Length: 255
Image (cartoon, rainbow, N blue to C red; front, side):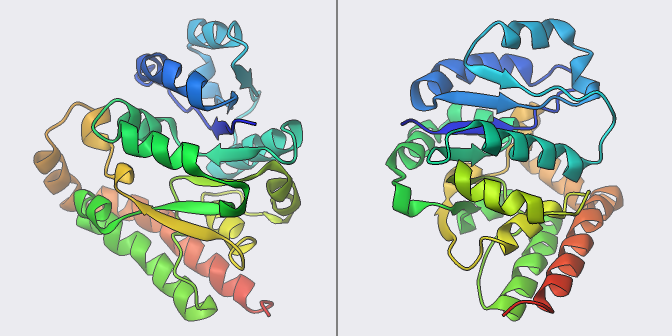
């Protein structure tokens, strides 16, 4: 059975839709289905949603109210896990990251990693390699790295709790999603906590920084801009600090 993938599909400006169409042949060749959950800000591009609904490769879970980011992700992952066969591998990812990988120099490496996964390889975090992290702004790397450091200190494991791409069997996700409670983005760290005793990792270059590609910006210029932006640093802190608090709280009952 081919794997499936699930992504939130937040595209309020409609900029990601052409990328989705561009990578669709690769997605259909290497995945059995894609599960999408567009928020209200994306549903207003109703012509895009209609086009996706007309293609039976997509299963769309629309939402009818504003949700916090963690609630949105939880709704998608929980519904996807319950709908897919328990033995199917589900790739939880982000469209901009996948588009960056498939439309550029990392296509072959990305597809090789997807196609090479065996049942015994999951659950797995595809983690940013040293090369991939070097492409990101330093404030991204340093702040998210502190969550990894806290996890190592608390649990003795070296994991990217602020992950960009994980894969797990649908049955595994069905078991953990009811345990995940945080309504904000720190819920992604909660998910890893409940899998961390048996989760595997693979460092990959194709998780290099996607924003210069997505926004058609010079990579060096944009990196410098983000590194010097207090707003960007505060944006990272708003999810990094709750992740650290969550891991610290969960460690009190960890055996």
